[in-house]
Length: 238
Image (cartoon, rainbow, N blue to C red; front, side, top):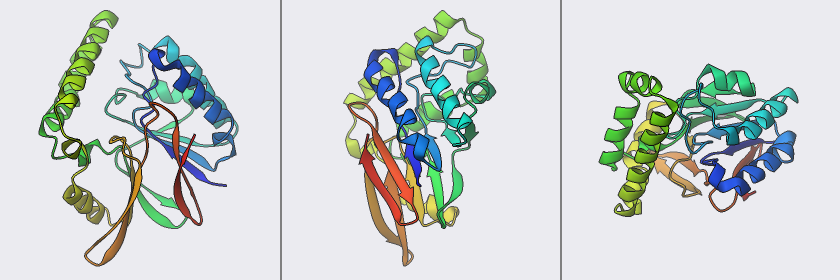
Protein backbone atom coordinates (compact mmCIF):
# COMPACT_ATOMS: atom_id res chain seq x y z
CA UNK A 1 0.00 0.00 0.00
CA UNK A 2 1.05 3.61 -0.50
CA UNK A 3 0.02 7.20 0.06
CA UNK A 4 -0.49 9.32 -3.05
CA UNK A 5 0.07 13.05 -3.54
CA UNK A 6 -1.09 15.12 -6.51
CA UNK A 7 -1.59 18.82 -7.20
CA UNK A 8 -2.19 21.41 -9.90
CA UNK A 9 -4.73 19.51 -11.97
CA UNK A 10 -6.53 22.77 -12.86
CA UNK A 11 -9.62 20.83 -13.93
CA UNK A 12 -11.79 22.77 -16.39
CA UNK A 13 -14.27 22.31 -19.22
CA UNK A 14 -11.54 23.25 -21.71
CA UNK A 15 -9.43 20.22 -20.74
CA UNK A 16 -11.92 17.36 -20.56
CA UNK A 17 -9.16 14.86 -21.32
CA UNK A 18 -7.48 15.72 -18.01
CA UNK A 19 -10.76 15.37 -16.14
CA UNK A 20 -11.20 11.93 -17.72
CA UNK A 21 -7.64 11.03 -16.72
CA UNK A 22 -8.35 12.12 -13.15
CA UNK A 23 -11.57 10.12 -12.97
CA UNK A 24 -9.73 7.02 -14.18
CA UNK A 25 -6.93 7.70 -11.68
CA UNK A 26 -9.47 7.75 -8.84
CA UNK A 27 -11.04 4.51 -10.07
CA UNK A 28 -7.76 2.67 -10.54
CA UNK A 29 -4.62 3.92 -8.79
CA UNK A 30 -6.20 5.83 -5.92
CA UNK A 31 -8.60 3.01 -5.07
CA UNK A 32 -5.61 0.91 -4.01
CA UNK A 33 -3.97 3.57 -1.83
CA UNK A 34 -3.79 4.17 1.92
CA UNK A 35 -4.79 7.80 1.35
CA UNK A 36 -4.87 10.53 -1.30
CA UNK A 37 -3.64 14.08 -0.74
CA UNK A 38 -4.46 16.84 -3.25
CA UNK A 39 -2.18 19.78 -2.49
CA UNK A 40 -3.97 22.63 -4.19
CA UNK A 41 -5.39 23.79 -7.51
CA UNK A 42 -7.56 20.76 -8.09
CA UNK A 43 -9.79 23.11 -10.09
CA UNK A 44 -8.91 25.90 -12.48
CA UNK A 45 -11.22 28.16 -10.50
CA UNK A 46 -13.68 27.83 -7.63
CA UNK A 47 -16.06 30.77 -7.52
CA UNK A 48 -17.78 29.84 -4.27
CA UNK A 49 -19.61 26.85 -2.83
CA UNK A 50 -22.87 28.31 -4.14
CA UNK A 51 -21.56 28.42 -7.72
CA UNK A 52 -20.04 25.04 -8.55
CA UNK A 53 -19.29 24.56 -12.23
CA UNK A 54 -21.26 21.74 -13.93
CA UNK A 55 -18.01 20.30 -15.32
CA UNK A 56 -16.82 19.63 -11.76
CA UNK A 57 -19.72 17.39 -10.78
CA UNK A 58 -18.21 14.13 -12.05
CA UNK A 59 -14.97 14.75 -10.14
CA UNK A 60 -16.81 15.64 -6.94
CA UNK A 61 -18.90 12.47 -7.17
CA UNK A 62 -15.89 10.28 -7.90
CA UNK A 63 -13.98 11.67 -4.90
CA UNK A 64 -17.02 10.85 -2.77
CA UNK A 65 -17.02 7.29 -4.11
CA UNK A 66 -13.36 6.92 -3.17
CA UNK A 67 -14.09 8.01 0.38
CA UNK A 68 -17.04 5.66 0.56
CA UNK A 69 -14.57 2.82 -0.11
CA UNK A 70 -12.75 3.77 3.06
CA UNK A 71 -9.87 5.65 1.44
CA UNK A 72 -9.42 9.08 3.04
CA UNK A 73 -8.99 12.07 0.74
CA UNK A 74 -7.37 15.28 1.98
CA UNK A 75 -7.55 18.50 -0.01
CA UNK A 76 -5.47 21.64 0.52
CA UNK A 77 -6.34 25.02 -0.92
CA UNK A 78 -4.36 26.24 -3.90
CA UNK A 79 -4.20 29.74 -5.31
CA UNK A 80 -7.09 28.94 -7.70
CA UNK A 81 -9.58 27.17 -5.43
CA UNK A 82 -9.13 28.70 -1.97
CA UNK A 83 -12.84 29.58 -1.74
CA UNK A 84 -13.80 25.94 -1.13
CA UNK A 85 -15.47 25.51 2.25
CA UNK A 86 -17.89 23.17 4.02
CA UNK A 87 -20.03 22.51 0.94
CA UNK A 88 -17.05 20.94 -0.82
CA UNK A 89 -16.49 18.63 2.15
CA UNK A 90 -20.18 17.73 2.22
CA UNK A 91 -20.27 16.91 -1.49
CA UNK A 92 -17.06 14.88 -1.56
CA UNK A 93 -16.58 13.49 1.95
CA UNK A 94 -13.01 14.78 1.68
CA UNK A 95 -11.30 16.75 4.44
CA UNK A 96 -9.94 20.21 3.75
CA UNK A 97 -6.54 20.60 5.44
CA UNK A 98 -4.66 23.78 6.28
CA UNK A 99 -1.64 25.12 4.45
CA UNK A 100 0.77 24.18 5.95
CA UNK A 101 0.03 20.80 7.52
CA UNK A 102 2.42 18.30 9.10
CA UNK A 103 1.76 14.56 8.79
CA UNK A 104 3.56 11.41 9.85
CA UNK A 105 4.41 9.83 6.50
CA UNK A 106 5.53 6.28 7.28
CA UNK A 107 7.60 7.48 10.21
CA UNK A 108 8.86 10.69 8.59
CA UNK A 109 7.47 14.00 9.82
CA UNK A 110 6.53 15.70 6.55
CA UNK A 111 5.42 19.25 5.89
CA UNK A 112 2.70 19.64 3.24
CA UNK A 113 2.15 22.96 1.45
CA UNK A 114 0.66 24.20 -1.79
CA UNK A 115 3.93 26.04 -2.30
CA UNK A 116 2.94 29.52 -3.42
CA UNK A 117 3.91 31.14 -0.10
CA UNK A 118 7.49 29.98 -0.72
CA UNK A 119 7.72 32.01 -3.96
CA UNK A 120 8.82 35.12 -2.10
CA UNK A 121 10.89 36.48 -5.00
CA UNK A 122 7.68 37.00 -6.98
CA UNK A 123 6.73 40.27 -5.29
CA UNK A 124 3.78 41.00 -7.58
CA UNK A 125 2.23 37.60 -6.94
CA UNK A 126 2.67 37.88 -3.17
CA UNK A 127 0.89 41.26 -3.22
CA UNK A 128 -1.93 39.79 -5.32
CA UNK A 129 -2.23 36.80 -2.99
CA UNK A 130 -2.49 39.07 0.02
CA UNK A 131 -5.24 41.05 -1.68
CA UNK A 132 -7.46 38.14 -2.73
CA UNK A 133 -7.07 36.34 0.62
CA UNK A 134 -8.25 39.39 2.51
CA UNK A 135 -11.60 38.56 4.21
CA UNK A 136 -13.12 41.84 3.01
CA UNK A 137 -12.18 41.09 -0.60
CA UNK A 138 -13.61 37.57 -0.31
CA UNK A 139 -16.88 38.81 1.19
CA UNK A 140 -17.23 41.40 -1.57
CA UNK A 141 -16.46 38.82 -4.26
CA UNK A 142 -18.97 36.27 -2.94
CA UNK A 143 -21.63 38.99 -2.81
CA UNK A 144 -21.36 39.49 -6.56
CA UNK A 145 -23.63 37.81 -9.10
CA UNK A 146 -22.44 34.67 -10.93
CA UNK A 147 -21.85 36.71 -14.07
CA UNK A 148 -19.77 39.24 -12.18
CA UNK A 149 -17.69 36.53 -10.50
CA UNK A 150 -16.99 34.90 -13.84
CA UNK A 151 -15.87 38.25 -15.26
CA UNK A 152 -13.55 38.95 -12.33
CA UNK A 153 -12.04 35.45 -12.54
CA UNK A 154 -11.48 35.81 -16.30
CA UNK A 155 -9.80 39.18 -15.76
CA UNK A 156 -7.46 37.76 -13.12
CA UNK A 157 -6.57 34.74 -15.29
CA UNK A 158 -5.70 36.95 -18.25
CA UNK A 159 -3.61 39.23 -16.06
CA UNK A 160 -1.80 36.20 -14.65
CA UNK A 161 -0.98 34.88 -18.13
CA UNK A 162 0.35 38.27 -19.20
CA UNK A 163 2.54 38.63 -16.11
CA UNK A 164 3.89 35.08 -16.32
CA UNK A 165 5.02 35.69 -19.90
CA UNK A 166 7.31 38.47 -18.67
CA UNK A 167 8.74 36.69 -15.61
CA UNK A 168 11.70 34.36 -15.42
CA UNK A 169 11.28 30.82 -14.13
CA UNK A 170 13.64 31.68 -11.27
CA UNK A 171 11.37 34.46 -10.01
CA UNK A 172 8.31 32.20 -10.14
CA UNK A 173 10.09 29.33 -8.37
CA UNK A 174 10.43 28.94 -4.61
CA UNK A 175 13.05 30.90 -2.74
CA UNK A 176 15.55 28.48 -1.19
CA UNK A 177 16.04 30.60 1.92
CA UNK A 178 12.26 30.64 2.45
CA UNK A 179 12.20 26.87 2.06
CA UNK A 180 14.94 26.36 4.62
CA UNK A 181 13.46 28.84 7.09
CA UNK A 182 10.02 27.22 6.80
CA UNK A 183 11.35 23.71 7.32
CA UNK A 184 13.42 24.78 10.32
CA UNK A 185 10.43 26.63 11.78
CA UNK A 186 8.30 23.49 11.61
CA UNK A 187 11.20 21.22 12.62
CA UNK A 188 10.84 18.86 9.64
CA UNK A 189 13.33 17.31 7.26
CA UNK A 190 10.88 16.60 4.42
CA UNK A 191 8.63 18.97 2.49
CA UNK A 192 6.09 18.14 -0.24
CA UNK A 193 4.51 20.92 -2.29
CA UNK A 194 3.10 21.82 -5.68
CA UNK A 195 2.37 25.17 -7.39
CA UNK A 196 5.59 25.65 -9.35
CA UNK A 197 4.89 22.85 -11.88
CA UNK A 198 8.55 21.79 -11.71
CA UNK A 199 8.44 18.16 -10.47
CA UNK A 200 11.66 17.03 -8.83
CA UNK A 201 13.16 15.68 -5.63
CA UNK A 202 15.74 18.03 -4.12
CA UNK A 203 18.21 16.86 -1.49
CA UNK A 204 20.12 19.48 0.48
CA UNK A 205 21.39 20.17 3.99
CA UNK A 206 20.72 22.90 6.53
CA UNK A 207 22.70 23.23 9.75
CA UNK A 208 24.19 19.79 9.06
CA UNK A 209 20.70 18.28 8.76
CA UNK A 210 19.79 16.31 5.62
CA UNK A 211 16.66 17.79 4.05
CA UNK A 212 14.41 16.74 1.19
CA UNK A 213 12.02 18.91 -0.86
CA UNK A 214 9.66 17.09 -3.20
CA UNK A 215 7.85 19.10 -5.89
CA UNK A 216 4.68 17.67 -7.43
CA UNK A 217 4.02 17.88 -11.15
CA UNK A 218 1.06 19.53 -12.85
CA UNK A 219 -1.58 17.82 -14.98
CA UNK A 220 -1.56 20.05 -18.05
CA UNK A 221 -0.34 17.57 -20.66
CA UNK A 222 -0.46 14.35 -18.62
CA UNK A 223 -0.86 13.24 -15.03
CA UNK A 224 1.77 13.14 -12.29
CA UNK A 225 1.66 11.47 -8.87
CA UNK A 226 4.03 11.13 -5.94
CA UNK A 227 3.92 7.62 -4.51
CA UNK A 228 5.15 7.20 -0.94
CA UNK A 229 5.50 4.06 1.18
CA UNK A 230 7.78 2.63 3.88
CA UNK A 231 10.76 2.64 1.52
CA UNK A 232 10.50 6.28 0.39
CA UNK A 233 8.84 8.45 -2.25
CA UNK A 234 9.02 8.58 -6.02
CA UNK A 235 7.38 10.66 -8.75
CA UNK A 236 5.52 8.69 -11.38
CA UNK A 237 3.49 9.52 -14.49
CA UNK A 238 -0.25 8.88 -14.62
